[in-house]
Length: 487
Length: 93
Image (cartoon, rainbow over all chains, first blue to last red):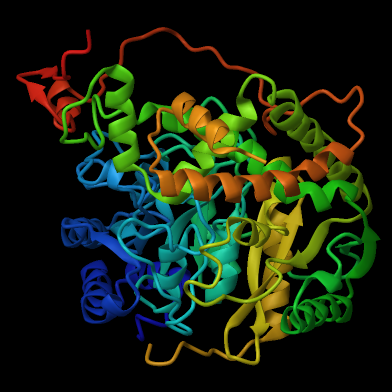
């Protein structure tokens, strides 16, 4: 069995069927990480107890027990999720050395489903970025071309899959942070419906937008992984009571009669040629499978980036107020004059530039005299956008759109121009604003060999339609099983 | 346009200290960002209730029962400065 190329489902079936031991799988990926991750910097930490966890899974299998639907699968987790006893940094100097006294619910559920925690992956600092360049521990590189970004903020969780350093991973998505790096790295990324997955123990960026979700080699793996982490959690009051369906078992890739919506506002004029080609091919593939292509409209979509950044920065400025250097986090060494000076010294040293920029933007948008024009106005546009999506979904089952306007860009190309970096998120932020589930699926390659994904969006809590359409598209496109050079 | 003075007053509200270089760069960058984001003023939102969360979940109540949580030792372990089981901070008054 080629462990590097195996899917999550193949690995867990092999562990359950005693064809391979969980310790062999864990050891295989640990060795690959040790050998080649210095080229990518996708991991910030390896779980020192991963082999013990794997041995426990093997012991369960040997004694006739079923360890669960993720039996023996090593999973890489974005370093934004708290892991008890294992340093969790959010890729920030503010939290360097922070060891959480508890684990995120997602991490607990992965283990309860039989998974083993492989390690913690690189990200943009506090998940603020679209390129993984704002990490305090160095940028992560795209395995398809090391001069290019892997996307962000879940860059490490995407790059480690492309480099076959893990069979599956967990990312978080506040404005596209799972779907965009999935697209840039040629893997599948799922942003669940808001309320589907517990945010307990996920370091908060923008609480009304944040969702953790799976990143995998294909849609079926994504369904299995999402089932394991979804559902109500008493530790997060925003989780839903909505039952978690057996998505994987119910995947139905028959597209006849399925209505695929194309957004009038996601115009082809906005995207580069290779992205337009990939997008058109995906639409054509759905048509050939018997789906009906319908035109839909979300008129406020063109305001999504502005609306998103005003709301996300406002929430971030409030959420990050907790980092004061008192009970945990960075404390400045120099003596300070008074309490405000003490806070300012700790925060100014602990936070990186992009985090400071967003705190500044959010503080301004919430400040007296500007609150109505920015935060309230954006929240009103947000409701209109959500209502417009509801109308669009009366006419279609799934919306097909690009993920980004162009494939992965070069490291350094956009980092000095925040506005250009923010515009990168034009196709992904609206689903977070409206709370909708979305998936990025590999759609093809640009002429320079970089992967390009397409995005599918569905109604609240209709992840099933995403998995159905994504699985159908994967079979129809039958992309060559290419791997990045040298991987 | 965000003047250096406005930038410094926002920084004060946010408990951040900015170097002169940072303040100049932020003033320029945030001015450009806000100029672009002002486009939302064109959207007709008369009578639209702001949407602060996409969640339709009704708040849940639970019995107020004591449950085990992390011990003081684990929590204090992350303190930048401590004395025994107490957080230590510089004198502030």
